[in-house]
Image (cartoon, rainbow, N blue to C red):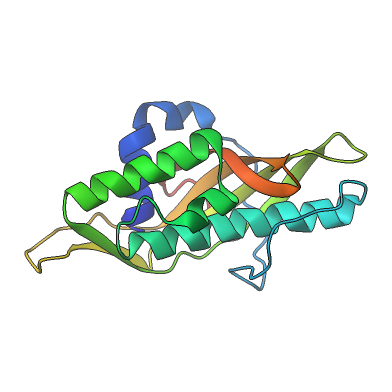
Length: 182
C-alpha cells in the first residue's frame, strides 16, 4: 500500500527493481479494479487466456491488499494467484511488516493491460503492464503508536504470469518508483 505495496515490495526487491522496468507507455485504464473469478483458462482461446491472465494479476493484488490488513504472510489466497519468486516476495514483505507491527489500509487502483501471450496459440505465458496507483493506501502501527508512511502515487509495474496446473499465476514482477507512469 503506499506505502504498503511500495514498502513491502521494494524492501524485499529494491536492488532488483531498477532492472525490471519498461519504457512502454502506461496502459489505458479499465473500468474494474478487481476480479472475482478464479483465473482458469482454456489454453486454446487467446481472448480467454488474456482475460484470465489479467484476472489472475488483479486477484494477486486483491489477495495482497487483503493479507496486508493483518500483515498475514500465510494468507492462502496469495498462493492461489502467485507462485515462485512473486509469492516469495509477497510473503517475505508481509512477514517484515508483521515483525514491525505494521498493518495496511486502503485500496490500490490498477490499470493492467496484457502486453503479450506465448505461444501465440495455446498460450501458457503472459506479460502484464500496469500503472499501479498507491496514493489511496497507507501503513500504520497496529498498536496505535506514530508511524510516518511514505507517500504513494503512480508506479509502473511489469508482471510475468504462467499457466500452472490450469490456473494463471503471477510468477515474477517489478514495481518502479512513484512517478514512473501517468
